[in-house]
Image 1 (cartoon, rainbow, N blue to C red):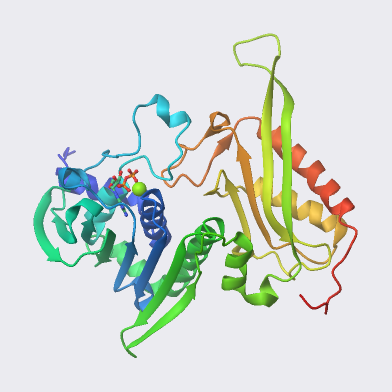
Image 2 (cartoon, helix red, strand yellow; image 1 turned 135 degrees about the vertical axis):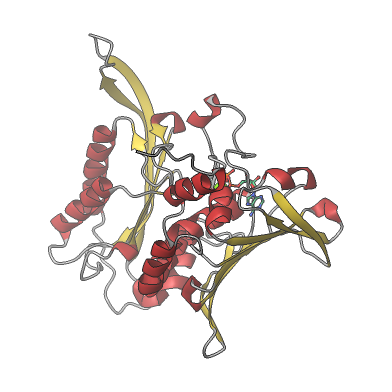
Length: 370
Ligand code: ADP
Ligand code: MG
């Protein structure tokens, strides 16, 4: 047997595959970086559904010159002060590996400008190991960051072939992911374009206004139209000092604690659901972080079924919970979040949502003017 010493650049490529597995994960990382940079405007441009290139342009704080050489190095992040901080992290990113991973599986160009750079942006390129390779000054730059990705999976031929085959499906999944962010960040102005290189057409796929007073309902309207967002009612369930009894694995006696919990967002009124359970109209968040939590969704669908046997609700549900109750650092994409006392939270949701529907006695007549 021959034991190979894998070249560092190959190691980077192999492990990057775990963070960046498809188009959705690319979009997720770039959009989260822009949101973390306090952007109020976000433009996303796909070329040929993303197969040719993906660009994310934001008006966030930009990156300081002294950080240029660290951006694409693995495990470099500006968002975690210490490991203890991991418990309460408020930003969406914190692993410091997304750009490093992206850079090793695609061709990445990053142009950035802070408010102190006097409109002189810097266009940066990196080696496959993530070291800064090239800096070009671009005059007339706006504050913010522009990331352009081309040649996705150019060095992973099998994955590229599979992407090529499934690009339309991947693109649709990426759009649904973007929707999950724009619904929960209504004050950011999102514009999404898809540029078909064969026809030369650059289509606006969707956009939100992103005003200071914009709400999730405005974003729902912008994305699904007035039909798609008809009959949605606001959810606002605020529970304080819930008592929780639990047993520590090391302890004999139960421990008692209290927690605050909030369920907020929008959900279909009793008679205004959709015909099928469509995952592209059901969004769950924990502290505004989009998550995959089948159990919570199942509970929502089951409660809704008690009031409407034939339909499923459109739902945008944000669960607000003390960050200490969460473990976000479970999977590289952070979409699986472990909740301490998940059983309890699920039970509370079931009960509160039933009460909510029971007290929703006034039905909006189907053709009422709005
Ligand atoms: P993380 O988001 O986990 O910190 P990333 O690899 O996604 O790691 O990004 C590395 C660093 O690059 C971030 O910590 C941040 O400082 C900077 N950065 C990335 N994207 C942007 C952006 N759009 N605007 C400002 N800074 C950014
Ligand atoms: Mg990030």
